[in-house]
Length: 382
Image 1 (tube, rainbow, N blue to C red):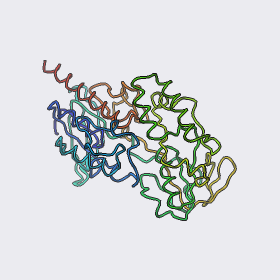
Image 2: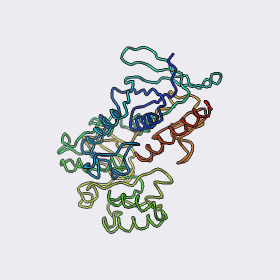
Image 3: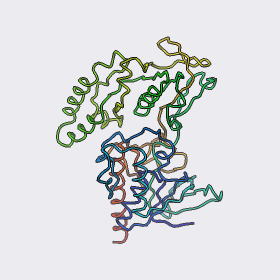
Image 4: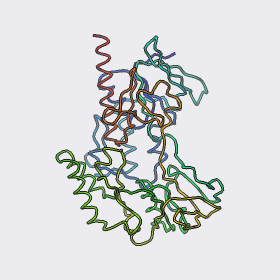
């Protein structure tokens, strides 16, 4: 049994940020990670052309800025280097290939009892921790929807985490399911590599440029959100025109308010809308079933495809291993309390990076958690 003050589960940006904030207060911790590297989502499961969609000033982790000459929108490779530099700067030493199997609260000893597996040695490790930080992410397991007939589809069907580039799909008919940022960008990437591309867009979305989002996030500090939203929607209509003719409708709630209330982000256009307007990317509605290589849509359209890419996001797997976490997380492994009070549960249980607030949200969570742990330790010793 290893006794630790703080156990952090997950060495993605949220876990690393929490570790750095604890280091600032000289609070000892152990950080465990089931993969063989930090930030595996960014290193291994992100497509080649990915850049951070928000300007760099909204994407810094605590206590370390980007290099002065870094571009406004950080590409994937530079972000991974930033994380490596961050790990070195704060001397963070994750225990890799260590998978947490269960975590329960021990009421008698007032601590968390954690069982983990060393995946290299196939041995069990036991930890006892006064504080437990869940930083294993919203994005730990691929989310693929149930579609009748999918198991009989003869072509390639992959989750976006395995998509790297459209090169191998040139000349093929490809359906992208999911119209968030990943789905729209993958559709654009496929179209530029001359794949016959269609995308399923089932619900209304705000389409913005990255400059508009940067403007909105800056103005939100000084103006009411509904006013900022009116400006953004007007500007988007001016830039993109009426996208409803191409199958893309706009939500009733404005983009900043929608993000604030539901965590749903606007789609940052990387060029998808222009090729959509030219008819190069076809927009389809909901799927009713798949028959062989033919996808039948609820509109009645039947189209044959060589490949399907699921840009349908991820789901949290925290509830598989975390017991006694009901005070903080719901059945989907996401916070029960609304932002900004989501990060703390009962019995010194915390979560970082689960509020759908991006890297800025992660930085805020990490600071809040470290400050709270410091004050609890002070009151114990006082």
